[in-house]
Image 1 (cartoon, rainbow, N blue to C red):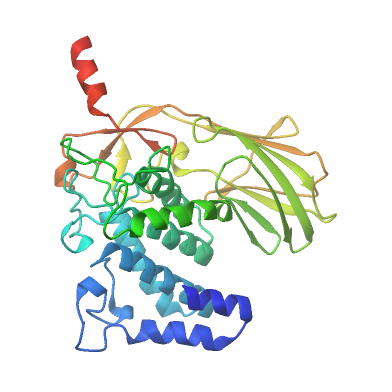
Image 2 (image 1 turned 120 degrees about the vertical axis):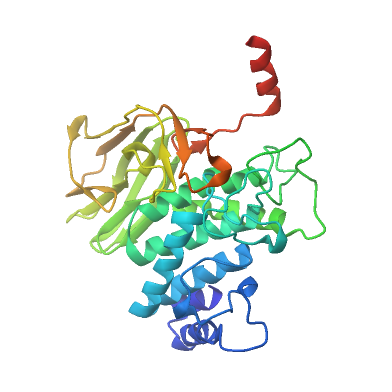
Length: 364
């Protein structure tokens, strides 16, 4: 990933060539050729996420970078297969990855235990990196659906509200012995999440040619440039607790630009972009988009609501998404989740803490 960034910043192809060299060498030597290091076979022959989950997510992010920067179809096909394997068979509902404590590793397909799940905080951060790069490669909102799920559930659970204690693994079930800690002998997760949180604003928007993508919803003001010129917008919202998002255009090029609003999968009836999870209730959610107080309609393009026009300072776009608690069930192939449901609202997966369960029993 670092070499890919150096190439983008300097334009010197030697950095991209070196990144590709390291990827191409993986799986071609007898020493260290094992799934734990994703070196069991050459990259172009890999079609399943295996081995140490943190190393894997960072490695897959680098492959996605090289695939995007070179445009090589074999690289793109290979990384697409790995992403599909994760989202189809190895992704926790929280967006966490890495089922096994042994080797801090991905498990077999549909191996997603709750009490013994590992779901390392660093692996969730890696999942954000990976899905961000897959979005940059393909421009599809489904990658941000996974990124958002990981961000709001798998990553942020790794740090307490006061920022002073941390989870290393983030299991989905606890017998009371799993508590946040002040520090760890191997302290990758506390330092990683402290590094990651300040980077979150960089995931909100994206620009390609004359398109301005709005990918995450949080209060902010941004300044950037599209093909036609400078653009600035402000966003007001209490998302993810409320589904209303107000976007005000502060500055726009005279020829206009295409504003692309991500319509999350959860409001369109899709838990994740696969059949690994599905809603298990009769609730139907919807959304509305208005421009200067008038409701407008548009067909979605890869999950984006597009408004292409000549904008004027003061133009207001409001996206209003329904939010209600939903029941979710896993694919029956996930043995650990058979006969169980989870509760989520918007992008947030809810946790039933032991004091709440005890209170419910008293009320009953």
